[in-house]
Length: 222
Image 1 (cartoon, rainbow, N blue to C red):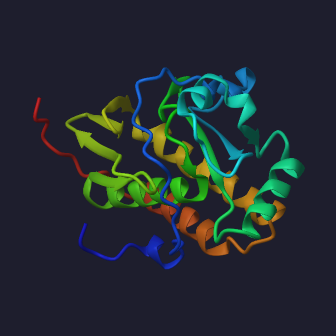
Image 2 (cartoon, one colour; image 1 turned 60 degrees about the horizontal axis):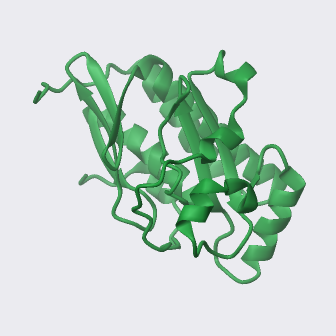
């Protein structure tokens, strides 16, 4: 990855390393954030959730019954912000939870991959930045060795989380990711009171880069 990313200026130094979460349970968490009306209009849908307990000790129960562990930041902003602020009294981070992310209704992040939501968005933004520069990008899910990849393959683009691969169209996927990132950091700024100006500026810069650049292509290995 070599060159210093413009996003690194604002990337948080402290990252929480949650417990290992590589299990085979079928994820059910994304259903919590489903908004059928919006899904017909937006290619990328996201719903950030904050974790109610301090940590997850029973991953299978977490995946099977997410409603017992998670509070939607968008649907219950006051409750979620209260949990966030309370966590900050004990920890250097407050966004521990789960990010529901889908593309045209297809789940992109498995239900067992919980972590620091702000950190997940940081990695996704840097993934987009590197992709716009080279046509191939790789980051890691915060706190664990789970790869996130976005790579051009001939006329197609693949988005990968661990071993879960999906073909995406950059023309709606990248603007969708950036729009949802902007939405998230705006929520944080308005509800938590932290200054997220640098994050929002980075998103705007990438929007401009995307509208003005041709994505490099790579030959497919398949």
